[in-house]
Image 1: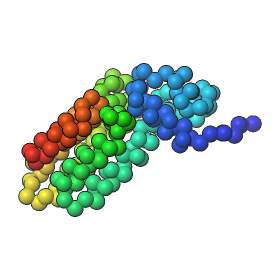
Image 2: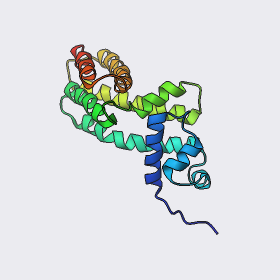
Image 3: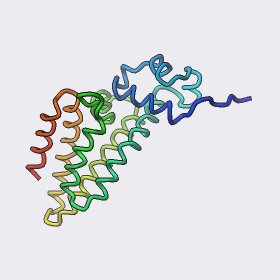
Image 4: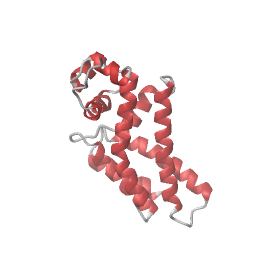
Length: 187
């Protein structure tokens, strides 16, 4: 006879997501997950398979939250201004105290690199490619840009958002705002 779950999977994944976001994948232990999620290892293994499974579900949860900003960008009428607003909105999204937590995707990509679980690497690469594609589509709203320029600037913006993500963890809001303003001087 199977046991009835006494916890909400979405709620425990949000807790795990925040733990991974702050501590990183490698530094987050199963004991830390148990404590933060409020469930035991048996329940974690039963619902998510293992730590990698919890992490993959945490990435999905993070993407759902960040999709609010991405959807706003997709609906923006002015591409470049919409992207710039996305950058500013991202700072608020990632704020924890005086500094940000960065981006879970960026933090994880920096930590894991290309030598990790292939499912995790694929999830990180797919999400990054999606954001880059949204940037490219927003840039296309400015009709004077040819496709080659759109592709170059989309690359520039995805690299810039990675930089912004890291910068929010250590620099002041004024410094980060200056960074954003200078990014958009070049577009």
